[in-house]
Length: 227
Image (cartoon, rainbow, N blue to C red):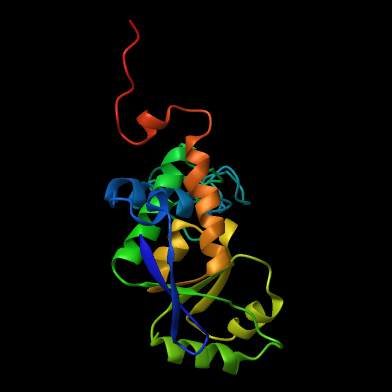
């Protein structure tokens, strides 16, 4: 698959060949949705806690005698029916963590990368580095590339000036290639990657799939039966 490579001024300088295993995968909506839900669930702390009627402070004696008052019977002031009482069926600390097979997580990520490339929302830069941190440089770069919506910038190597230049823009986020994830891609309209980030993505999610398994079965072809 051929993808054009842009310069910081928005000009196409060349085209590169990218791996079809990473950037030309059919979209699997079920796997992508499961990966998104799993990532969002794992980000929840689950530390919220409410007190039951047995945990709030206050006397447990009856507020008044049970009979001959003309009112309904009342128990402790710690009842959930009264102000300052305990909470009935309230939340308690719990874990929201979900498990998902590694190959399914990788497939979801490759599906999103392929979808961005297929829809023309993936732009590859030949080099992404600045001499000094300047937000103005990132703004000029996005204008030259014709990007007017939320953007996820993915870099292959640590670039402090790029991170500092983009962090003041409200709809722009910078991320290293190895931390690329489904939720961040879904949260941004345009995916902007340096050429080194593309090559790192190919190494991380393109070739590793063939290690320790049958390559035919990973491509969706049934392995030959043993006689």
